[in-house]
Length: 312
Ligand code: GLN
Image 1 (tube, helix red, strand yellow):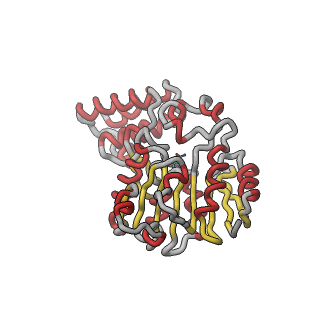
Image 2 (cartoon, protein in one colour):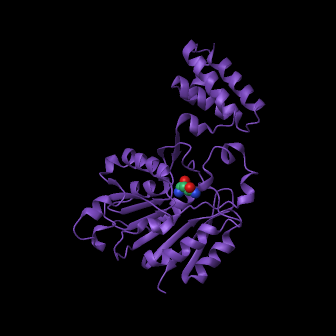
Image 3 (cartoon, rainbow, N blue to C red):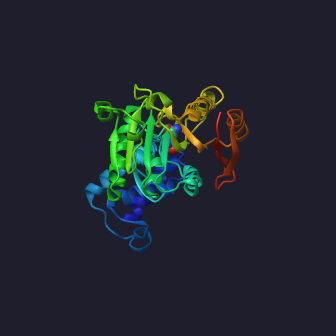
């Protein structure tokens, strides 16, 4: 079949399935199968697609028509100009989250330490490490499966920068003395499993301090989740979405414990939902954070809240 005919077939199927961006998805899947780019449809619509590729395309269109996210089919999502591997165990990196990374960047100086709480695919931490020098990174998550994805992404993306990727604490626990000095380490990114700050517990009285803590925690209220598109509600991990009855469960817990893990003058950055600016700013204020600022995304919705920690 001709390239453009196959494309139109894809568009029809996806639009029938109620997918808003049917045209875009049909084109991207065709380019994925045929290893072509966006120019092909314009410049070579008459291109004849091989039978095998045609079959594969029809199959992928069927999957997408079942509302399986495009990124679960192709296995990748671009974020901050980097290509992240994704699967059903992590939240697909969102463009809105780039605003969070961009807000952190001017405050992130060479050699600083960063904690990414609820790291998921690792997109936030890995981008920050990629666009800085000599930083020390720690990514924590409850999900082992998510951490596997994050680790894979870190190895692939940060290879050129010579950043060592580690997971767990085993090597540190085996070291004779566990001192503050050994963790976090510059030019190293370490992924830790645990329930929020419990992930950092080395089992010793070690005070782990960071210059920057960043988090895009689950923040959708439980009742709202079922109203979301099936791509999100059915196929993305519930634990990465569900922020409890009022959506603020993780902000409360993170704000409380972040104070113990920030240096004096350290900063805490959050991604927030469009209606959470007041509540999250208030949580930071009550916890003693100062210079609390907020930032909107490109759609004009409140997206980031951050503040500075001085002392208790
Ligand atoms: N930090 C990850 C991201 O922004 C995952 C966030 C989450 O699971 N809620 O993509």
